[in-house]
Image 1 (cartoon, one colour):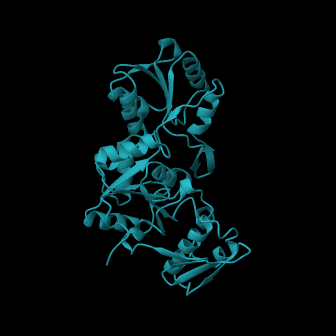
Image 2 (image 1 turned 180 degrees about the vertical axis):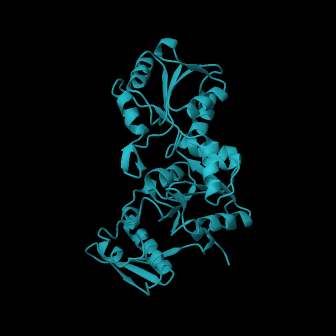
Image 3 (image 1 turned 135 degrees about the vertical axis):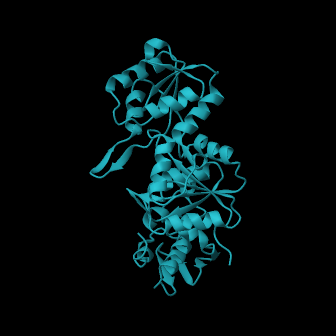
Length: 331
């Protein structure tokens, strides 16, 4: 039996919401990743988090059931250091507004660390640092105003904690941005450098990106022409999906990483109707939609959702809520 993953040589995975939720693995996903490897698919974990060393991420993944080696991890700190090597002369002076991990990656890439703006840095790079001092942002602003090139590992506006959201590196970037009239070059998802680094490091010929966020994971893949797979174990769900802009639409969908082992989900559109599996969705003249078929199983509801997406994305359905309300097994 064919599977969604067939034909792909590398599967790139976002972490939080895809591979784990907090301290725990997503149910069934360690076995799913193992099954992909048994089929000969290389599995690689990709994270925008520049604060933690790759080895820390590896240790966490191993602890919750994912065998992982150094080459199986790509962080935005690693991707940033690699990108700087391509765009800055060797030995350039770089000021880092981030954690020691980002300092180490930049140093290992052959750059000289500038302590502050008085060290005349050629470039400034920002990354998330929970202990960042405001004075560090002042120095970054001075350096950029004085001609240093400006880079950032990612632009995540916030990050989740057990008590709620806290400001992410995006907030620090905005603070420095208030001192100049332009924005930094961004390396992490959804921007191209991170995705291109993943392909370069793995030699992937037909990769698939698996994520739970439309605005970073899926948009990042779309931006470089890579196929993508949206899972529903994390941030975004059916309501965001049907209303997604073209730049954030996945190639396919499924409940979790384990769904990659299921047959590919294909929708056929004919006139004002779309059929996927046993579900048929029809666009009504007033922009609403109806659905026919047995929706008792979650897989059938995903078929209906995928059919609905085709009609919503084409503009035939402008009010999908009546069908979405029937898909109770999908968040």
